[in-house]
Image 1 (spheres, rainbow over the protein chains, first blue to last red):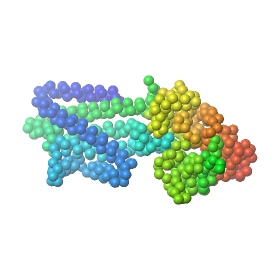
Image 2 (spheres, rainbow over the protein chains, first blue to last red; image 1 turned 90 degrees about the vertical axis):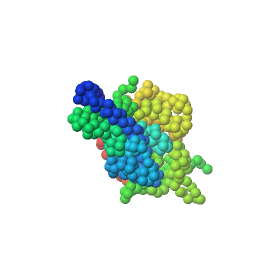
Image 3 (cartoon, rainbow over the protein chains, first blue to last red; image 1 turned 135 degrees about the vertical axis):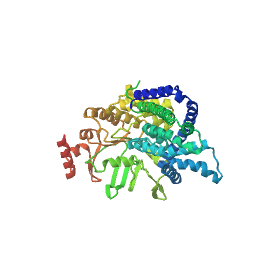
Image 4 (cartoon, rainbow over the protein chains, first blue to last red; image 1 turned 45 degrees about the horizontal axis):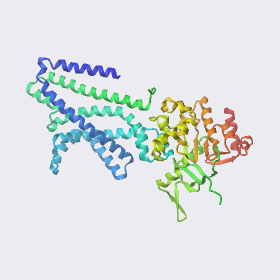
Length: 242
Length: 259
């Protein structure tokens, strides 16, 4: 989908939310859902930062790390990719205290979701680095660069451009996964919606609004990633220099 | 004692699995010599360059650069695999230009030529820029210094690649089929640059090429490879006019027929 179409869709979604939130039937849910949306955004932002850091670290260690660290990276990726995010959250929040480590629900949510998406991201990072043409590595050898110099200056900048589209997918996945945190007592958007649904039974109104809010958030992520993609592509492809 | 040869391959063997690509290669190249390597595909000629650039490991024998083993060190009279620091020290004398250019797509022509001099040789940015600008002028691309590779023609990209390699001041330049990926009308401009380089008497050049006319006029020596061995070598004139070996004759006939 083109940038313009995305922008139009996002504007329409926001306008619909604004319109509905003024109607009698919907108005009472707005403060509660706004609070929930704020929590969802906070968790999404913090977990996204953690996911990116974890992904780059694990992805590069799996490729180039010394044996023990490489195994650790593989173990991390497989464990977090191979088990359910919900179980991971439960484990962090309810099981870990049994070992004497108690963490806040919010922290558990950020760590759990960040590391879960980071495990998928590690494969994205690895794939993007591997996809850089072999000739680029060979050129760095012919110029007598070290591996670290080659990676930092030549390979990663090119891999970065290839990573952006799959990261757009992962960040939307991350946004939607945050709905699970309602299971560990956090008052995110999904939690507030269920809570209000139980007291008012206005399921249609509440979940229509919630659906639109999630859509607005994910469209914003997509739009942001598209802009980033375009900037990165300019650095690689250069239609014509200014 | 006379000085050691610039490059020597001593009984070098390369295998991929059960396939022997190079079979006990012996080849000595003097300082400033221009050597053309020709032969049918699969004869191991590109492998020779790639081993010298340390892009391929060797399975037997030793390669020396100015007498010093490239991937080995001598310890108590025996050759043992060298560490990376040693390899990098010897490798610094060698530069290479590739068939597919391999320019860095995210850097301008100028920055392509500055990157390694700054990061590897430790030149200041000003020094590296002056050196890169001189070399881009030498290859006739002063007015393209701020262009990205994707904005340049194949011939221009290859000339930038030559400038980039020269910016490291190598003693030996390797050219691996550097005109094979080019449209026919762009071949000339690249060969022109290589010809100009040839006037530098100190620079040793080793090229794998399919341009028989160019090899004949440019090289001091031609080596014809066949099935992992040097089948025939000699002065270009003699080789092209009167090849001694049946394989060489067949090859030259086939190349001539193809035009």
